[in-house]
Length: 154
Image 1 (cartoon, rainbow, N blue to C red):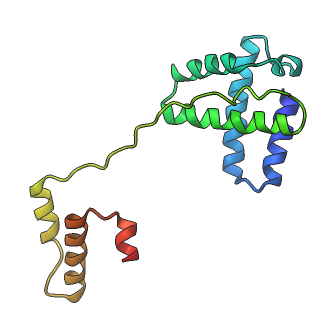
Image 2 (cartoon, one colour):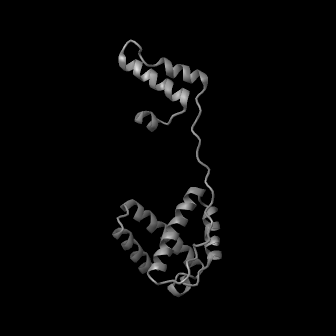
Image 3 (cartoon, rainbow, N blue to C red):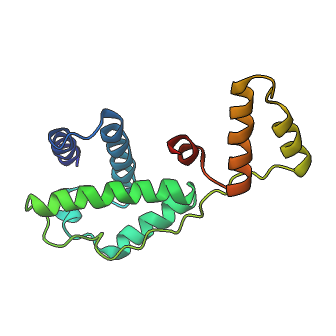
């Protein structure tokens, strides 16, 4: 399994993945390798027989310890890894083909209280043109719900 991980990370280097992405994929695969060793499945012949049920069992193992976003990252690493193994001819059937990733709920921004909005709008100094600009920007943000990057582009 170590050789497969090395080949996979070398392939990621060739595809110009960032060093941090490569490191994260490597760590995810090492965690998967540890789980495979616990299941006595860490050899290439046994990896070739892995099916979706084993991946779902690993997903359940991850779900007990990690948040959905982290589980998705691990599964994404596995999908890349098994796609690499399939393309290089080391496995015939990709066990990740039918694995369903857990849903992630987007984080909603924190809401300001009306008193906090009033206090925020009172901060810019209207005696200076930059203060007028800042107040106008804050009012546009508040009244339209634009994101900060959208306001900057405007």
